Length: 147
Picture 1 (tube, rainbow, N blue to C red):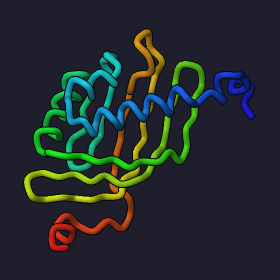
Picture 2: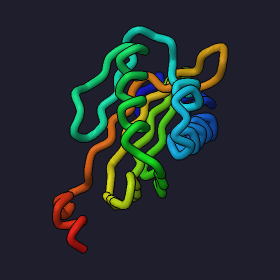
Picture 3: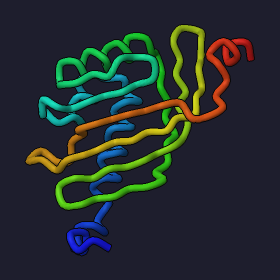
């Protein structure tokens, strides 16, 4: 094991798990301001959602989140951490689970893989990077609509 990782903080992953929970709750609220409160003000933040270009910087991330929330009337996220790590002021997590989104009379359920990177800041743990991607062997959107 690398000596830099031999400290008490490496085992204290609770703040990272809590930051993940706050972010998931905010996403489910579909409230853009609540979601953005989870993000760092750092100019280099990045967001990758399936089907959209990577957003970089607070303004681009907000625009991407606004687009997603505009086209979603209900969101339910059931995500479980697979791996959570922390080293000092940086934490990261890998989660898997299911997102169920509704817009109008259409509902889409998709298995997702999620990676979040957080940084401890004066206002708490904030997101630097979020990447979600569909899990393998997902039925197409059209196949889901037909069922």
